[in-house]
Amino acid sequence: MADPGTADVQAELQDYLNSKNINTLFIQMDDEPPKIVNRGQRRVSVCAESPSESMNAQVKVVPKSDEETARILEILKKNVLFKHLDSDQMNTVKDAMTLVKYKEGECIIKQGDDGDNFYVLDSGTVHCNVKKEEEIVFQMDYEVGQSFGELAIMYNAPRAATCEATSECSLWALDRVSFKVILMKTTISKRNIYKGFLQQVPILAQLTEYEILTIADALQEDSFNDGDVICKQGDSGDTFYIIKEGSAVCTQKNASGAEGEVAKLGNGAYFGEIALMTSKPRQATVTVIGDLKCLTLDRKTFKRVMGPLQDILMRNLEHYNKFQAANI
Image (tube, rainbow, N blue to C red; front, side, top):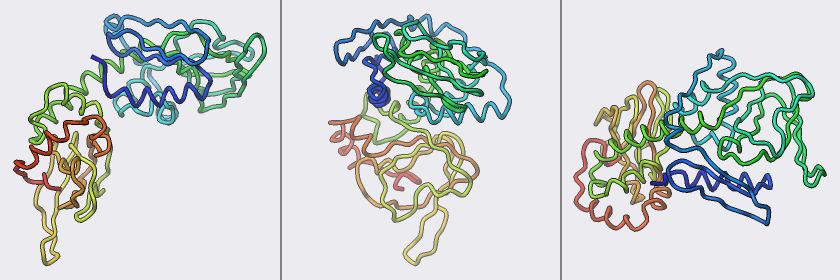
């Protein structure tokens, strides 16, 4: 079964490829045959490892200093291929990256060669150029903090450019198989956890497992700090929240304006689900206690992924008995 949650990422990645004049996007995340999008006449060869073989591969953990860890994570969070990952996936990717070094003038990747590594430049400088019929049609220089070669961990088509070290340089490298293993294993685990959370939400009770998984794939993870107000009584609401880790307090003002605590929310608690289908103002204020991670889904995304199921859920809503903070 294809992962519905990859659709938005694939669309953004295709835009990214188009901006680089690259004709093909291929992401192999399951047992379906490769999907290929061709633009123009140039033919591109694409193939992939067996997903089952990838799943059995072991992902290495390479020790890094705190400074190196911070630099790598900062770069990954800005990269179109990685910025969609949650914090656990991002750290696993970071752990798997290996340090490689090149001397001035050495070729790191060569246009037309097979390639399976993505690189983050940790020190030094790198020059990149793209040739067409021996004429350079594009070139740029990479500096510390920049990255290249991400296409190689999406698919194993030939390299689209040549990159050479223009000074002695160090790079952190991530191979395609490790990246796919990380995504597959963490995605499967995450889906099962999210499914368990969603199955506890009464208005979603009539949905099939596939429909529940469709919503699970659309959930985003957000982090909050102690004292943060997630939602405020009286504000308009369009986001549903599930507490993944941490706790929060729910308070409500009465007719005289006095505010009192109405509920404490912990792991697995959810609130704001009615906001997925209506624009009713928030009925209470939710404030974070300590550090907290929430799974979130906004109304626009919910309507896009669920489509005609809106009618079913609206019927459920008519018979929905609210509990503690469910009407937030």
